[in-house]
Length: 420
Ligand SMILES: *Cc1c(COP(=O)(O)O)cnc(C)c1O
Image 1: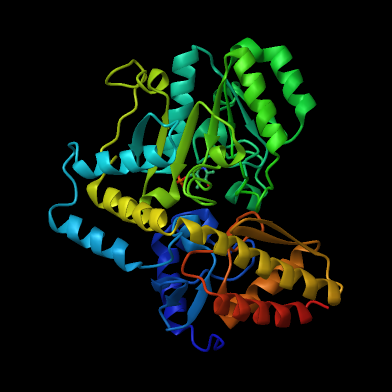
Image 2: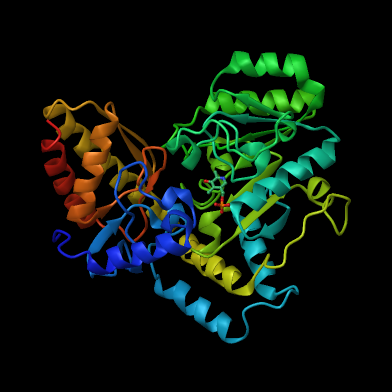
């Protein structure tokens, strides 16, 4: 992999971006505030690689923050996007592709009897929480420290992802009154959950949880704890919401809920199911979902929801995934292989580093924060694009090859040498 030799065009674009976009980005996680320096604008992508405006190629482990499980510009997906767009890019009316995508998701996640599409994971979670409150007639919700569920006001306390990266315990601009019904708990702390329910149980509408945490690096799942959440929510008539915006279709062709053998009341989806285009979705039983307008009194609307171009990208992605569902294991193997090799090298070099890996996702954590910065810059310069914060996850796609991983390992080993 050749070193980054030129960055003239990138520098120019970012300079202009900073004049018209806040910090030069449209989402704070894209800034390089954690690793220092300017972010690199990306021109194109193909398979496991992305290319900047100066023709430097990178092996990509960000993959549009987990949306691109098939890698960049997968031909089947591109073709369906183009064909659909040729017929018109949106009508604000029901489209057959919405039905087909919903049917396909339902076939893979049977507990989703009905689905509502929206345009982002944020909206999916907001809709799900409003629905849970509407169904139960209760106000309080429980969320866990350092989980991220999108940028709704009442969920931005002790959140993961960009807020954790910026060490912000709470976003400014969120009125205290909007947080009074948000109870923050620690993931895995069973006693705390018991105490919260003992105190507030009959007022708790929902528990919101990422079944595998993806927004404070990878947070390894605690299956037993998830089961405890299911049990206690049943006992109190509280709804259990799995935020599977990252985990849906990530580890196998279906939900993480099914993988753990748990049946939540509502599942939120996003990222992968849009094939790289903006999407969110939530679903559950008929009884719960039919409380939504137009059938029920819980209101949630959207101009762009179910957009046909988005639906076609999602549908063709799920079609490819369904026909290559056995290959998920390859993703797991590659992530494990990468993690083990980097860990072993770190041990040899006596660098204090840990890797949290679950199936095809992983995050690298250094004891010294300055080490992450140096490591990150070295990898970037040598052509490996990781998420620019220890609080984000990295992803392996179906397009990644053993060769990609071997290259990455070689580059990582050299970078570790520099940390000694
Ligand atoms: C990305 C993410 C969201 C928010 O999705 P957006 O599409 O960015 O609004 C919500 N929950 C989880 C677990 C996520 O990873």
